[in-house]
Amino acid sequence: MAADAESLPEEGLALWLTEQKVNPRMVPWLGRHLVASIGSSVAGQLDFFLHPDGQAVKVSMLRVHPDFQRRGLAGVLMDALYAAYSTAWINHGWRTKDGAQWWNGYREPTPHRNVHNRPPAEWASYFDAVNVASDMAHNAHQNNHYGLDGHRDAIYRYGERLEAEAALHAAAFRPVAPMHVDLGSQPLHGAARLALPPAVHEYVHDRTQDSRARATALLEHLGHGNLPREAYWNTTRQSAFADAHHIALYDSRPAGPPLTHVVFTLAPLQALLPSTAHALATSVKFTHPGDMAVDITELAWRQADRQHLTHQAGFAPAVAAAIAPVSARHASASYQARYDEGGFLRAAARSGALPFADRAAQIQAMAERLLLGRTARARTTRPPPAPPQTAVPHPPAPGQTPPRPGRRA
Image 1: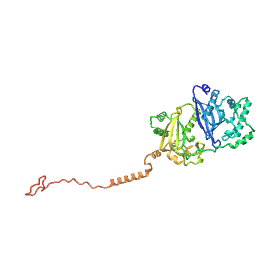
Image 2 (image 1 turned 135 degrees about the vertical axis):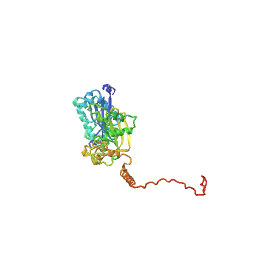
Image 3 (image 1 turned 180 degrees about the vertical axis):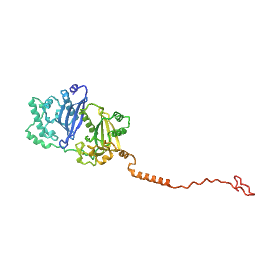
Image 4 (image 1 turned 45 degrees about the vertical axis):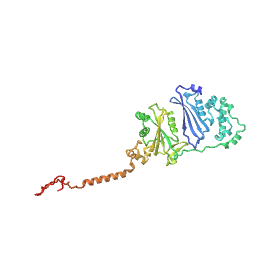
């Protein structure tokens, strides 16, 4: 490892584990990419499949970009795989000419976990013994043809004919049933990559500001009806972030303003028909061309070049939103009533979020009654007010004495 690292460029090496989207009916194991980047360039990639219990790995492809070959990078990737799954069986499958020549110079960290080096009785529940034997025969032919050793002393030698060995262990293989995400039982997480205006970018990444207000600003900027359609919606937030970063690694567009990766967390979808979605083991992609009403329960975001700083905010109650339709002609009537052509809330939809919005008819009727009563009172003729009364004292009769103050007459 040390020699490998010393031969790499000064920009530094980063390894990223991302999900490989595969049809579980074709490959029921979990697909993974292990990507190596140097600076802003993808230098290599190791593709593999992981058994659901994490105790077996099948390598499907190892490749290094021509600009970074012969620097030990393939060994770094393979060593990282062994380290990440430190107790799992490793099946390298069959090799091409280049693969056989590379393998000839590679030194496995733990050769005893390579199924090609161990008897089928130890690993036959994970891998089909006949297929493994076929791959071993192919690799042996490659080694003989190109004059390679191929670590032949470590390879398991069958003690009897292959047919008999296969008959002993083929029945031990335990196929994995295809797994599909259950949309109605768990939240889903989907990512979008946004190039925000400078002022918006500065505000939403300012940790001194209220996180919920910043999340609301992000949603307003994108539009409530513009949740990403082409994204895979994952069972974990980290997988959604990994999807966004995997796309960024292979993005060939010229550098521009810093991107923000935003992950939307949706409440479980209870009323979704299976025919409207392409469900994988741990993710789903919606295939219906129309819009889809969803509820956002949380928002998380971070700068593409600052993976270690993640902002997040929850919404309680959840915010009503929608996955955008393919085009305006596929938009439903309810979508068109709530969102405009750009996917932004219409004025009526915005007022609907105000308090007492569900009592609009009742409030209107009350207002009309008040106005009618006011009009009726204004039309009523009132009598003129009576003049003020002023007491005038009468003169006393002859022979009487006027009463004095404080005495009764």
